[in-house]
Amino acid sequence: MTTETATEKQNKPLLDFIRVPEKYPAEDAYLWGTVCSACGAKFLGDRVACGKCGKTEGLKEVKFGPHGEIYVFAVVYQATPGLETPYVGAIIDLDDGVSVRGNVYGLDPTKPEPSWFGKRVKMYTEKVATDKEGNDVIAAKFKVA
Amino acid sequence: MRDVAIVGANMIKFGRYPDKDVVRLGSEAVLGALKDAGCTIQDIEVLVSGNLYQSNAGVGQRIMKEVGATGIPVVNVANACATGSTAFREAWLSVASGAYDTALAVGSEQMGKMGLLGGGGGGDRAYSTEGVMGTGLMPGVFGQAGVEHMRKYGTTQEQFAKVAVKNHHHSLGNPYAQYQMETPLEDVLNARPVAWPNTLYMCCPTGDGAAAAILMSAEKAKQFTTKPIWVAASVLTSDPYSERNPTMFDINTLTRNASKEAYEKAGIGPEDLSQVELHDCFATAELLHYENLQLCGEGEAGRMIDEGATKIGGKIPVNASGGLLSKGHPLGATGVANIVEIVWHLRGEAGARQVEGSKVGLAHVIGLGSACTINILKK
Image (cartoon, rainbow over all chains, first blue to last red; front, side):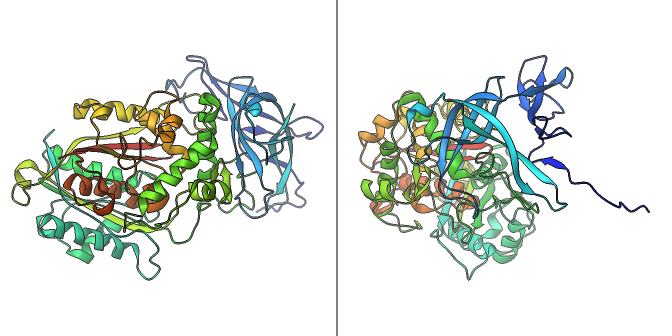
């Protein structure tokens, strides 16, 4: 048996479809996913097959973001203790043709209005937690562009 | 497929039963349904039990041990919020296929006081995605679904709130509802916001409950009743691919697919329905389903609630029971209870909330993500 002497703190993604480079934050983290070359469907993260047409061949990894717009949202008031409320929990349509869930900042959550539909947003990443091994956990968020 | 009749139907009052376990709740509903049908557990050839939170705990077999373990096949079903209605459909299939002459469907659930946020934790991790990268819990998800309707058609929060006003008003006639209370529009709009546009009164409560139904072939049913209720269609769908799903659950497409198939199989159209019990887990959902079930045209749901068309006494009463908003939503029990409610109306046994002259009723349930059942019942 070998014993690790000094484990270096790492940056870990909150979700699998966030890729955090070794040199983060000097290098930006980004979203990635899969595109099906047969039907063109796009998905966040890895796939064993295309969820639209079922093809297992021709799946290619692609990078997504950081630009997009708000499709719809809810303003969440009742949440797990510790979370800042109310917050805008949105579905973001990224310009690359895939959608992602995200918190949107830069809007007044107490005054939701129709002008938020289609509002341009930009993704950013930041540390949101520390895991049991002491690594920084990195999440993606959105701010009004 | 053979014709299938509902011969027995029963539910317990939904609520909180901290002193009973889920097997006892399910057993009470089963005994009630057996009594209603005028048969005994020895007449039942197969049991299908719907329960979500104890789906690995043999709830169906434990109910049989409680009410009379005859050794018949028992199937335990879990299918999100459509668990109970999926159990009903499996029981229907058992008889419709010709494999059995009698089947019992029971749905049960004990949710205690877990509240709306139950099941939303991050497992054994010290952190969660919820509220950090958007929201995946039901209040937010159904808030977004309503907001999508706002975006497409200009529907207002007030129109969604009117669903809660109507359904809570209906509940005053339903002693089986978890909550029976009037909630005027002003109270609904001023209630604590949960996930805008839904306020507290626009969200269904969690709770405990059970419901059961006994199904028989036409030939067998004759031995027990002169007033069978017929299953004109029993349909189950899952969500087909759509471009934002599963980032954003699609509660519409699979309901549309299910309703189209159900109307075709029943040989009727939405205009032939006397009433509908649909899945109003949140007030926003009800308006979407008016369109999904073709009760009105695209974008007309807001106007439909404004005009009072879906009240008891209106053109097409929706959720005469008070809906999930008042009746409660014990997941495994909900789908069977919707069917029990329709059966009672078709028999003219629904008491103060009776939809007069009801001849054909539709029961709709959706669970994420996603399962949709539609059962059309007729006299």
